Amino acid sequence: MNQEKNTAVVTVLGRDRVGIIADVSRLLADYGININDISQTILDDIFTMVMMVDLKDLIIEESDISDKLTELGKKLGVQITIQHTGLFNAMHTI
Amino acid sequence: MINEHEIIETMQMFNSQHLDIRTITMGISLMDCAAPTVEESCNRIYDKICKYAGKLVETGELISKKYGIPIIHKRISVTPISIVASACGAKDYTPFAQVLDKAARTCGVNFIGGFSALVQKGYTNSDKILINSIPDALAATELVCSSVNVASTRTGINMDAVRDMGLIIKKTAEATKDKDALGCAKLVVFANAPEDNPFMAGAFLGPGEPECVINVGISGPGVVKHALEQVRGKDFGTVAETIKKAAFKITRVGELVAREASERLKVPFGIIDLSLAPTPAVGDSVARLLEEFGLETCGTWGTTAALAMLNDAVKKGGIMASSYVGGLSGAFIPVSEDEGMIAAARSGSLKLEKLEAMTCVCSVGLDMIAIPGDTTAETISGIIADEMAVGTFNNKTTAVRLIPVPGKNVGDSVEFGGLLGTAPIMDVNRASCADFIHRGGRIPAPVHSMRN
Image 1 (cartoon, one colour):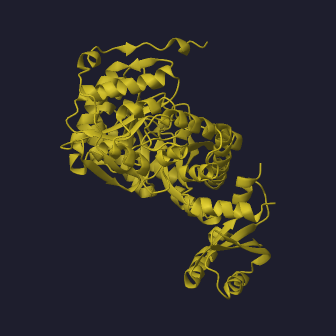
Image 2: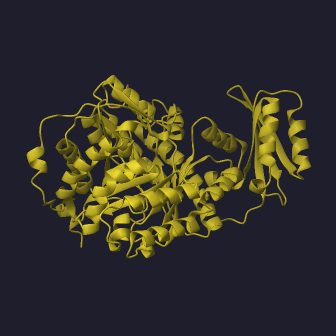
Image 3: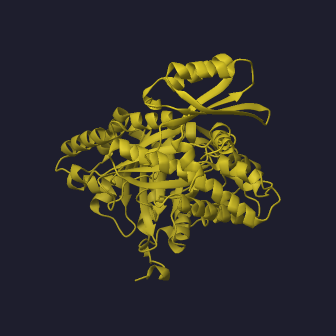
């Protein structure tokens, strides 16, 4: 397996509303996760936000970060997921 | 560097197109569990499976969490029990099925495959005992899957086994009639069975396989269908290219999961089986995917050509994505497990004969098809014989998983639930083939088996 950087992609799908970025960023900050890049777009009427984040030493599957993000998503009425970048590299690079 | 477009595309594959890892299947050799008594052998089997697969489910869940990938099933495949049990002297192998069931429960897996025999050229004494034990074994267990390989391109077709399996399928239906013959949904008859297939009910760990191995089965008819929706009206070259690209991406997900599982479990990675395996969920159907080629209903003229092209393009995309593509790899066409197939069968557009033609170019065979309960054992054997001929003479895997549902007839349907779905009872040609089936012996291997 590639010894790639420990980075992840956080995606937010759903209806846009004030404060989504703030809430998600705050939660990520609590885990010491650094946001490298944010972009957002409207796709098929669905608000989509993609954050590239640096996990530093955090191991997604050993932490409760994904549960906490799901929980926050439910509160905000959107779907929030965190996925290790390895997935996207595997699928989209030869 | 990945871009936003690719990330969103990936998210859509998981969210709305039902992309999933169908199964992480751990193959475990039980060769060293042979023992002079049933008890000793079963103890060894239980201990070995639990030792090797104890962390399989947990590992699958961790990988699922890391990458946000749904991993639907964790399964185990083992050495064909007819080999493992041959030294124990028993006359009934049901206890072996029960110990497999128990071990599977302890490990928390969804299925365990390998209550199997390889009899393409003939029976050992043990093969015979195993085959006769199938009806009781499947009635007494829940998670155990059984398969019998009765033909291969190298050896021809064992017609004694074809005859016997017709009867065994009937008996299995009878033994599990309180559950609408559910036992038959866990019993496959093969030609050219792959020894590393992670999919059920046909998974077992062949004699040439290692001590322990991780094989991953990945699915995604919805992803391919979505890709084809973007090229409506374009020529077949574009269609082939589109399928290949989608298959490539799907296979890469499988490869990632397989390598990670292999590393975490410290077990070698075997193969990725890239099979478009449908589920009864809307949007996860191979039939609907075929219809996206431009067919009004699956089963109409053009279906076989579309399936042939689909199956081939899927393989081509897959082999570019992973050096270890194996198993069945292609498109599955089970009827009960596919919302579009069910609809096509109900509408009368899809018939058993057309399904047989489709199996010439798909990756498996007549799969999850419910037929009237009063179909004779000989007729079932006849269907098996035809399907085995398709596999043997075309150098490919074919399989038969038929469910003669006691007390039901054309117009009825059966509900199996979960991934097994709903099956409308399909009509069967009733003209007798009994004299053909009772000849016995072997159909010789085809001339193109002489490759040396």
